[in-house]
Image (cartoon, rainbow, N blue to C red; front, side, top):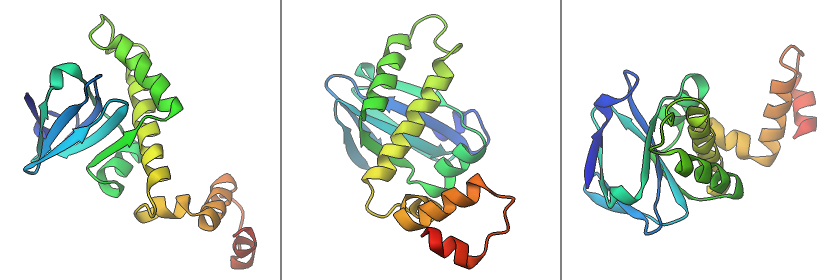
Length: 171
């Protein structure tokens, strides 16, 4: 097994990890609990500087540390659970396949690899939102069919002076 701590991360707040399960899956050790990540699942982990996570069967997995900035970081840090495990979607499966081909190869930390990692983490978050009955915070608003339609319209035309009646008509 292996243990990673948040204090070795790329930013002052900690470390973000994308965990790709191998053919036999793997187990995470977090807060005294063992959590299974089955084959064809992906985990996104956001560790604060004080946290750590352990990995059993880690040699069969791809563990990628990544740094997100701006809105993606705020989403991972404040709005989502610190650990998300999702089944691979078609998009996620494709991106994970590309990442697995690159892990350990020369140049895996340059070129498209960081962007593929970001796409995989984003796809995992979207899969988690889609599978959650009531996502937390503003994510729940975006995921809600009526509120999300209004928020989408507001973001498409932020210069417009929206009235409550106009927003209600969209909902």
